[in-house]
Length: 303
Image 1 (tube, helix red, strand yellow):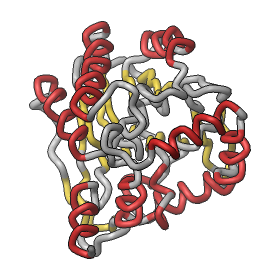
Image 2 (cartoon, one colour):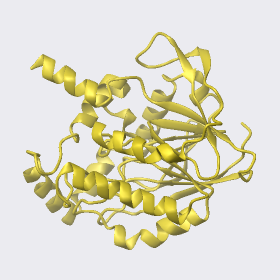
Image 3 (cartoon, helix red, strand yellow):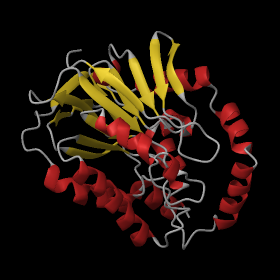
């Protein structure tokens, strides 16, 4: 039993978070216009994507950079079928947006519903042709220690070049803005706990013992009980403070002088809520009875 649990945690991310700093290319406009879109929960019965597709398109059209902020897809409760079918459909969906907007930069952050190892591998294979060879080199950051490491962390830098695609990240920073799915606050706020939390959604629809739970959850959504549950589990000030606590356990370069945080996960819209000197944003979720509005912000290239 213990060996199986260790294997599951290894497969689903029992490592330090994948963090990166975004560096605008000279060919990119300054300030950068950035869209953060998360929590679509595509393929699940509770998703209302048909009501929001035009909103998503407007947000991407208004931006140079589109950050897919996690939980775009819901593999464990997918109505499409087994894992390969759903993963292929997910990649096709992402590629359709990239092909429609080939000069935009697309970034994919891991969420708890779509961080399964197989999908992350599919993401990397999809993004490979659009990787840029001119990314700035990583540099050591001896002043910043990760939450599960006592070693100096690498400061990974990704260039925001038109047409670039960067995937499989847990949090990224651009100037004064930090972007993260938000589930990093779960599991005690450390990497092993987050891996354990994400593992709850690592199963696939055709093999899942959770289909009955899925039916119960659909019923709760229809009755709008999920709104009350989200309000209790993710109170605004408490959630923002927990995100700040997590960020400050990461390498210094990720959180130093950050003024704004954009996140998903909680399904509660926030429009610049000011907590502890930081402005917090959340676009809600594209599920029944929940407000959804992508976050679009202007970000100057200089910190």
